[in-house]
Length: 292
Image (cartoon, rainbow, N blue to C red; front, side):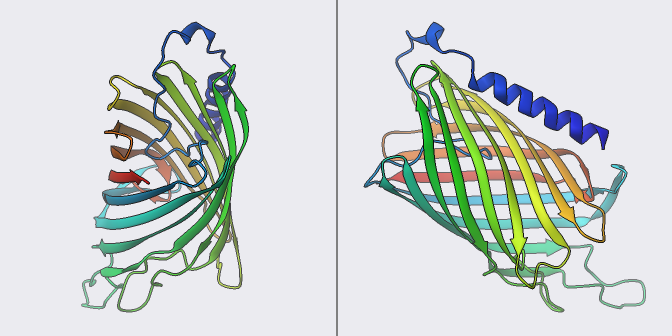
């Protein structure tokens, strides 16, 4: 467990440094960078009376996994396609609400026939995923430090398909209360985001799930008005009763492209670089956002 603890401390220390460095030395930079990132939350809510519609397509795959000791092993090819749609509405100043969901197509070659032609489990599945509902409240906007802080709270409803004898499931299969503290900060054309959150499962179908902790930090630079390369460090920890927990440390690189006031395109790749009891997955992430 020493490596995850060191990583978590490093992320928190770096995030704190990002938040409280003054921005006065960058006052000459007039253009404000884009706060949106690929996998790190944004503290900036949608303006009151406005909307954002976001369509996404993600593709993830893996051919190896990490065991409980962090050792890598080969596994059958697994992949996931996900087409998502999200709507965010600005309600009043500093407050917006969001609803998002997706449709998933799954395949897992580890779930196949064994040497005696017995079916280990379903190999494929496709169904709607879970629905998420949230509200984002920006409780701090400091112009001196170009710093914003927001609380994001909501729920995930298990509306997706469940695991069965004939099909892989697309749902976490239980309700969860999701909460995140997010920060965004600018230094001229430089921009940084950080978040820390926890998803708490509840209900009579949570099984062994006891919650998921996650933290992320992202840094970007607005090279052109329509182009911001960005880099992220992502970490999550699934707490599981009666079994070993799962850890993931991942790196994300991407391009944030605010084409104009109406359209923004995000393209990124996330690579899991270390973990326990998880797949060594690679993900391609694409998003089109329309502001109304």
